[in-house]
Amino acid sequence: MLRKARRSGQKFLNPVLTSVGEWSTILKVLPLYLKSKEEKVPRKPLGPFRTDVEVYRQPPASGLRVTWMGHSSLLVEIDGTNVLIDPVWDERASPVQWAGPKRFFPAPLSLDHLPRIDVVLVSHDHYDHLGEATIRKLSRMDSMRQTRWVTSLGVGAILQRFGVARAQISELDWTESVTVAEGALEITAVPARHFSGRKMGNRFETLWSAFVLKGAAHKVYFGADSGWWEGFAEIGAAYGPFDLTMLEIGAFHELWADIHMGPDGAARAFAALGGTGLMMPIHWGLFDLALHGWRQPTERLLEIAAEQEILLWMPEPGRPTEVVRETELRSDWWR
Image (cartoon, rainbow, N blue to C red; front, side, top):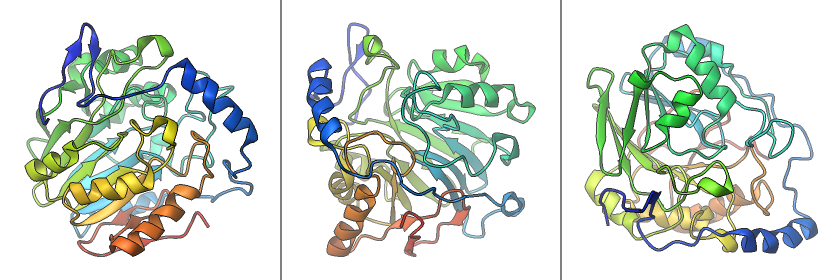
């Protein structure tokens, strides 16, 4: 199962048979959405969350530090290389900025105040992972002229359209790798069970991936978006063990269980990937993208972690936080 992506005509295929859902799914979701009484958007303002940029003046003592900006946007400092992952500073995860899922809180750090960025990593083209306004801003910044952009097959054309120079972009197929920062970091794309498309009519035309970041002393698994599938065990065997495993827990429902796994599936995936190191929940806490309450994924994950003795790593948004082996972190900012 661990192989390059296959296609049917011009469309990429999932590693296993997958139901994504079409208009029929939308028709099923609409009445559920209208009946829902969950707190899907925080009733009280969150934060404010602000990143202390002075922290970045000193490298992390542990060699690994992560700043979670909310949802799946992160700044990862790994063994001397700075990686900005799935940056979305846009106000909404939507084709337009006057409608659609709106941020629960402002970005803790302005793009202008980012530290040196060696690599921007974009997993796939969905709006909650690839923000147009964010990419356009980054592409115009003088500090980003030498930055490498690493992404999945086909996504490079979107980045170019938003202003990124073609020479800066590396597109990866599943199982392909690229070394960056003068060989200090190896990034490998691995299969995920999801889909792509920035509108209903162009689904599957670009690839979606999870990624392994391998530095001199640390390994990080960034799961991006994926439903559960048996390939997690093969990925763990081939590329693990991981110091930090980032897995999505939000925006899940039985109607789309093939493409989002929720907290139960994330715990299962963590075990399959090797169950070592720390598990970091991502893809939650910033946008209303599902029918469940906004706190529900993390509340359920805490229950599972207690039952299965999973070491969780859950920092406050915007706070640069060192990752120390076997040292759990549980902030309760969301409460």
